[in-house]
Length: 137
Image (cartoon, rainbow, N blue to C red; front, side, top):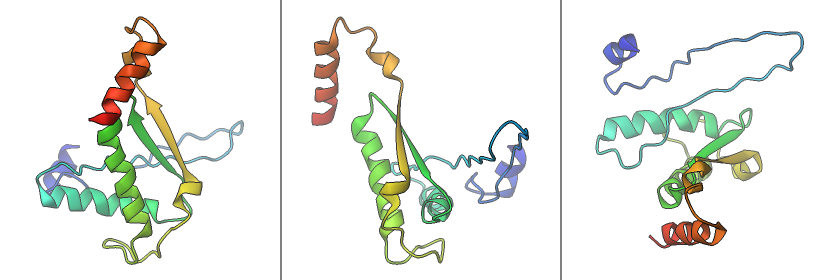
């Protein structure tokens, strides 16, 4: 990590670091963890670096897209989904020459995390009310 910070001004690199786990008992499967979209980051170079990395993968039909969303952050994570749509469907990419990927939704999985934040609720009605309040914000 120190080398990346020293070599790349924004702290992000398009170079992949690979960890391989091999076994005759499992099907080949590869996961590429890209940086999260940082739409609220005031540093334009950081946003551009991250979006360029993400765009190279989300526009590529060889990859499926997994969007992680925290259960309590509905509004904030909606911008991530919107940005993925923009990166996939823009007529021309800014970091790749790959064509648009209009069918990206057929290859995208959304994973909701941190539902345990609702365990302190007394009942389902309270949890539903909290979620509804988040949607309105």
